[in-house]
Length: 253
Image 1 (tube, helix red, strand yellow):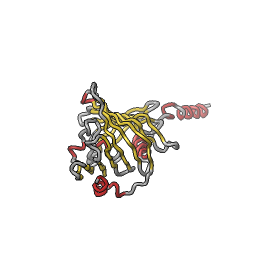
Image 2 (spheres, rainbow, N blue to C red; image 1 turned 180 degrees about the horizontal axis):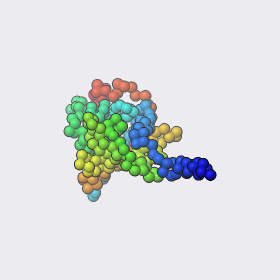
Image 3 (cartoon, one colour; image 1 turned 45 degrees about the vertical axis):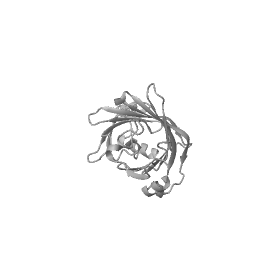
Image 4 (spheres, rainbow, N blue to C red; image 1 turned 135 degrees about the vertical axis):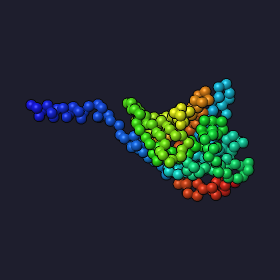
């Protein structure tokens, strides 16, 4: 009888909700998300950016972004006319270049400029940097719900990043984030980025949001929106040379 009770106790423990619903390690959640975000050889997206100023007309900025999984991004601005032809090349978090058509020159984007919003929006050049977290941040699980994991990220000693702290909310059904909270060194939340209306490939190997919002809490919760226009294009086969400063200048001219 005692043996039977012992066996039943073990079975009940193994089937307990707390054990059955235990989350993977925070690091594995983060790494799995990064792998899914980068599940392509190259990715081409067309965006329209608007800043929603209350009582003002929402002017648009249009651009195309070509992304490679663990390396570069090439941004080509197509509208309005005063920035048409401007290109931004992201090589890494610390190496970015901009082509200014008015001067026909390529300039390296200085560190103090990378964290400034472009075209009056809440999106910065740093926000366009490579989407990797695990190598730069220590991560812990804050909590989990039926739909989300909440991860707290703090910069690792010796690493340099734009935001020393972040909080990621990751959807369990997709394994991808739908919110990032950007937090300064004093622990104050400065802005929130939302990833909405995900569209996935037929095999669910990669998903991309059709709407991205940036809410600036230091500017009265001003909202900047990026809306996806046209098709999501995968694996066009771009060569390495188009992600170089030399090609940036040649192609822009």
